[in-house]
Image (cartoon, rainbow, N blue to C red):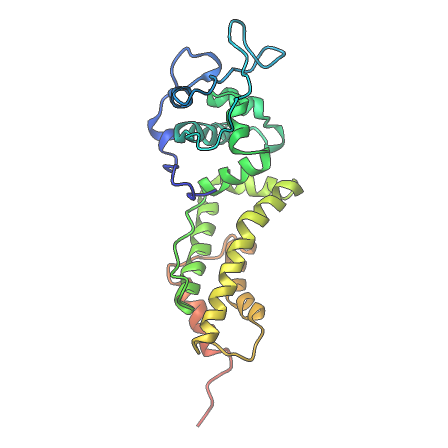
Length: 262
């Protein structure tokens, strides 16, 4: 997933990698890099789609490896080409529901097996595409309370800005709502871990005496996250100033009741 395997240079291949002109099926130099890398391990070469049995004329069929593929080097260039292929198809107006693994493989210049070795289904692939397009989740200390909460609230704000500035990203999220399997995959692998991290930061803040210890931690978490979600999701016209996370935290810590009159 997003940035976890250290292989992805965000959109680097889109900006710097060119498809080889005249190559069949849009085959790119990036896909060739994978073929060379995997060939060096003794694995069979990728077979382009086209023939009924998954092979093209004159190309040898892919045969099972006699040994397990443990330790086979993954090709960063191939992964980049696959992610970019999905983005390019979406930018061309293809709906999520209309994208097939065959179409993605052909656009990326790789075989279908290359995709399935990395993603078992389209939903996991699409989630990685979304995470690739969104700003990276910022690192947090894992030991601080309010300081980590602020970092994660700021991350919510920047993701909201990204969706506002990218019609493509906004459109993808809109389409996801009508694809329950994709939405559930995104929720389980992206949203749920973020929420858990926020809850853990709230617990640390309570333990450190930065927040009250007589309230339910999930309620406290909702009080912090709620205002940012309202601004970023439910009010797309609302401003998202740079100091919004600090303002939310300050308002919650000071409370909304007026100061006592002397």
